Image 1: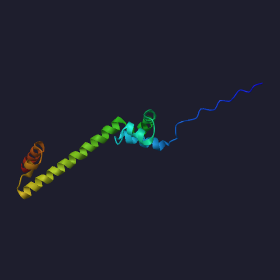
Image 2: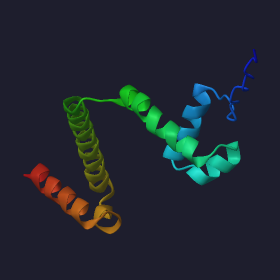
Image 3: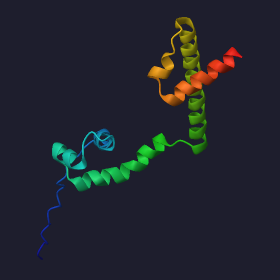
Image 4: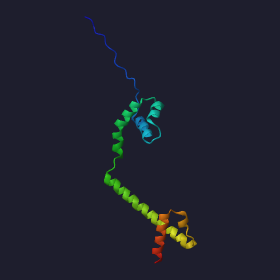
Length: 127
């Protein structure tokens, strides 16, 4: 009886890379530091492999960064309130500075809409 010859197993041509390496390559591409073509040449990886990693690992990244819409709106509202407080404080400092120095520098150095807002605040304070 003839024994059938065993065919050799198909060898893997690709190289084994770590999960962190894949994430770092994808992060560089997503942040615009390098292009897919440049990453492929730099790391000697095919573009299709990088595209495959991007498709597969996009779900992993989105799970980590997922923020509820209501939470995001709440954060943005808090940020707006904080910025408005800072703006009001800065305008009050400018008004006090102009009172002390007697010079109206806001009209000269600030955008027109901000200078007008400061002038309105001044009028309210003098009443």
